[in-house]
Length: 430
Ligand code: UD1
Image (cartoon, helix red, strand yellow):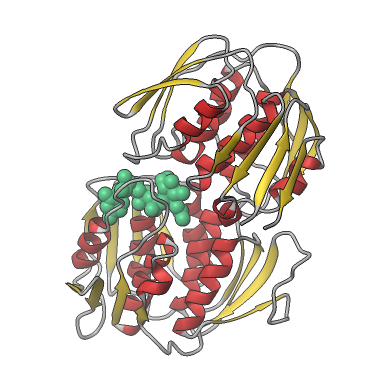
């Protein structure tokens, strides 16, 4: 298994291109199931999760080509991919495929809306909590679907004539359930109103794409979304937004090591709260034409308390990285995780580098230390693993991160992007 070796202590200086967002690309790819026409997506990142979803969609009958060729473009950064679901050949998403990636459960929405039936395995995904699917089931039932759980599968059937629009109030904000109901309601009869919907930029990106395909959606980006169902959707061409989590991650790396980096293509409006928090730690955040410039020269890192929240609050997907930064702050900070109940697996690994963190329930108390020291550490999930990389960049000496397949799920060309800015970081194969 590959490992990443880092020799810490270098400042980061230069430019890092920000890739298309994994969490936006996945639902957009799934939306290709809604039409027999071609959906062309630009700026799709080259990541293990994307490749996995291509396999899953292929199982349902989705053909794809990358810039006209039916092959992976190994040398490329984010790519343009054409997806065509001319015929849906299978409405079952099997356990072997869905268990590898939770987001693949989302095929339930378009399969049900287009084919009137879907049989989708209960998901797996990152081990960051129980992550149930009750909201998906409730929401689809509100659109008149009949749902049974049978041998580990969710079996969903639409009434004769298709799903029926309705008003649905989410009892809890869920990004995935919002994506699924948006897709399903686009082909339902009549109007659907989603209340307490997720406001994440990835939801807006999906709604914009669905509208380009002929859907009638308004209000995406607010907590009430209205969808007027249509009979059919067509193909479209649509761009994946830049990855706000990758942006925030590299911004935190610079805030920790010091230096001056331009995050190319990054969009400040996608980060909001997280950028304000970074400024409070002492980093300078400067929006520039080509993206966001992040700078920290000399000054220490100020401690800041954060609590994760749905968008526009501080993202749970940046919690681990922020904790990495706070381990070297001049004082105490508290970090509270409100979205997932088991998202502190990085704490023990950060402690191996010398971090001082105590946990009480969903809150971590971090006592900043003046230096971290490199050590072998283990990646436990996608975002946790990158927090170890960031801490390793700032630590004295050598850090090796094992189980890097977690990183490959969500960070395109991580070593290359960081070494291009002066970091000593390499992948060791085998
Ligand atoms: C998405 C992101 C993930 C991010 C998360 C929160 C993708 C591929 N993943 O995950 O990176 O961390 O949003 O911003 O985009 N919940 C239920 N019942 C359900 C569904 C969810 O209780 O049926 C709970 C979850 O357990 C969690 C909370 O709702 O506590 C939010 O989860 P959700 O927004 O659905 O996360 P994902 O869409 O899976």
